[in-house]
Image (cartoon, rainbow, N blue to C red; front, side, top):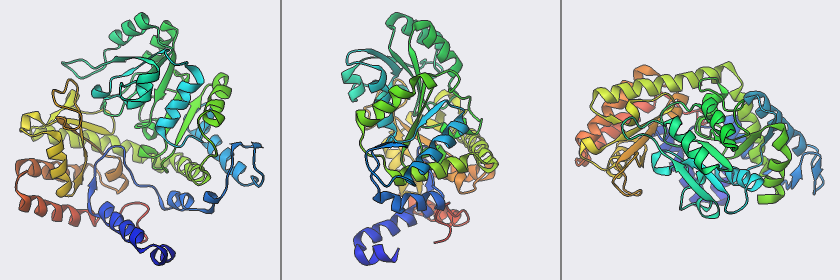
Length: 415
């Protein structure tokens, strides 16, 4: 990056500091990962220079002979990987992808149904501070107080009573499998469309580690980063009958020209995700999450729902006597990066919640396996036990940094 260094030393220095941070810390935020060198190269390519409003073969600008091939490759790889009739790879990110689904099928004021944000859902599933909770009449299902699990009978009762236009199935902080077949039955009975938001679990779905929503949902949305290890973008999968509505909603409905460098990197990530190596990676992510959860339970951590079936773990810190924000900040100082998070029926405010959320995608990308999870659980326990002792946190950070040297991050190995 000699050109960047000579042109803008300030940005170059910040970039190198971020690289060092990503090397030296354990990144446990479940929505973060490491993109491969190939994905990074495609993202930083000359495809950035091209404007391409429209779709392959139907553009408003000339000079698309290579861009069209890139987009077609991304589409075909997405369709093949997930077994979908159609794929749109132009959404800029996950929230715009979900907005395109609303725009395709809903009018302002229509009833929509999604998982409550404090119970593990996403802002764009109709939460009150989101545009989706303001333009539409949103009803929200929750998890059970005793188990922190979805009660599908109650979801069915709500759907039959409310008759929503769309039902969103998906979550950002639900550590258990989602029964997409059951959601599909509920949607059909209620006369609703089912939209599966698999942004967090798309890599697990692609690898067959989590049941796929594609046979059951009318539309499936996903980011392309997180478990897929691609660039920061999104895609929408749908049945053939919805292709025209989805494509028109993305362009010209919500967006102008697609980000061609992102589309190229999505195509690369989808190719990588179709390999046996990626399938093994996804299986290891779940094995690591289960092992880490068990190790934390042994140390007295209160795991929401008692464990995990996927890539993430939600921890209520109340029994440890600390708020989630305090714990996440102490962990970060100690070289362990997570995020504070609400837990179901949380008595605390969203910006100062009771819980933390951790996950294993990024550390698994670095090659860590079950045996390394005991180290991580032990360091987390040490941090919580010595949360007010800065010297102790710094000692843990040094141990973590030394540990991380043996696990070079993908995409950064050659630097």
